[in-house]
Image (cartoon, rainbow, N blue to C red; front, side, top):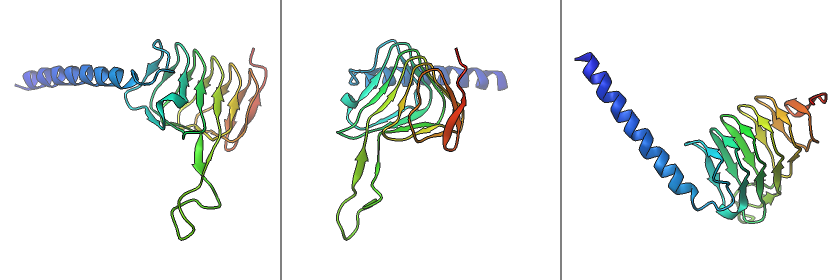
Length: 168
């Protein structure tokens, strides 16, 4: 009986995964600036207008949250690898009015984020608004990226800093 239950469970999981993948593929059709060769994980969240997201060819994004508003874009180059629980946020709350209060509604700060080609972004990385990452940059797991970095470097830390520029 145990083998039969295991088998049925496996078949149900298999069918559910097929359905999830079809739903993801359908959802991504409205994102015209995401290259069709890129691989977008099932739990990736795109928050903001579809036309503000750009993902290059052969890039894969595991489980990430990308957020932007009407004024800022998130551009991710080709051949990038983005890990689990990564946050890429091109908008944030203003320190002057971070929430709805007696002074009015939330003020947002929006600035483009650009990530070059062939970048590797480790798990649990946070990239804030206005950051530009060069080509072939590796960002270590658990880093907080608060400023821009040039090509061919390895960065890590909180806040992230260059730990190796001898990458080639």
